[in-house]
Image 1 (cartoon, one colour):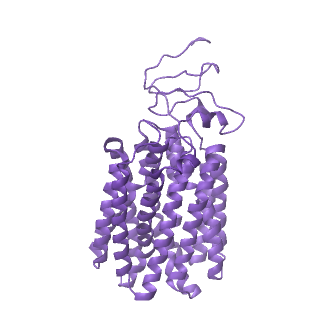
Image 2: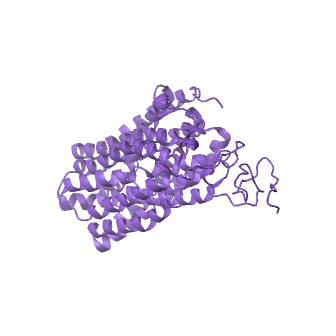
Image 3: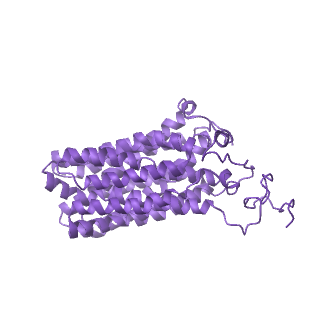
Length: 443
């Protein structure tokens, strides 16, 4: 190919780095490898680690209660503080990712995740868990969901729902680490189990973070399926001001004036109130009625299977039926399964609940970034996803604590799950209202 020659392309071709640096729009055929799929793979792994660590708290729960001699509400409070910290710092981490790119932010937070777990393994009082797990681990985890979904959204346009469905399916895969954690506890004790998880987090997450790139412009590519040309990157730093301003959308401050942001905040608050109550207390509920702990731990993995399928199915379906409809379907399924859980006593009922509940849980996750991008554009997508994540984590924190508190008072989870079913109905109502809302950014 001649020095000044340009490669011809069709409308949907994938761009690659040009041999001539000045040829900004050079592209090649569909045979070219698209780096966005590397982003998808890495983010899926990161999400798997996040879910495995977070949802394993349910199998640590009774061991912590026995070791520290505290109530279920107090022990639930550790996870609740984690959720609040996780969500609160997600906004700040989203802001940092929008301006400085995901690699450095994610690598730093991955180090903090491992540190929090290793320090948790050394705790000898419950208040120390509030610091090591609730605060330190919460800060480390705060960047994971925001960074993974926002970065993926920037790399894909036409198949954004599918890409986000794959990435968030990592949460479903992560639940398979829950029985692994249970076996680690049974073999080595809860302290060494947390230490092993911390080392594993360092070994997997820090190297993975280094593969992340902020947007296609960094590699002279164009967003998958998009038509707009991407200007050359500012190679002086990962996310130059030029690349931010090139994206359409409004700032987080401007978005805060519009109802759709707070409707999304509310829906995910309510959904995760129900979700975290179940994920933290389902194993407790099952073992309380005589089901073996290892069998009970598999319920979380079955939820993960449903979650994995839900993310892929609803992630793909959202490209056809719209994210509003996909989210509404998930909220309705959530409500039905929670009513079913109130009456669940037999083993087969737990497995049926787990797979269908997982479908609802998995299907709602990829809609978050898509809906944020739909209403407000991509300019501040990471920060705005962080706002919605904060709502979700506050709801999750309250839901986990309410489950423990209700049990301490009534010695049963029946009332707690009934409350969750009522809360899920509110999520359905607000989602119906959200369908009527108009995008702030046209198109």
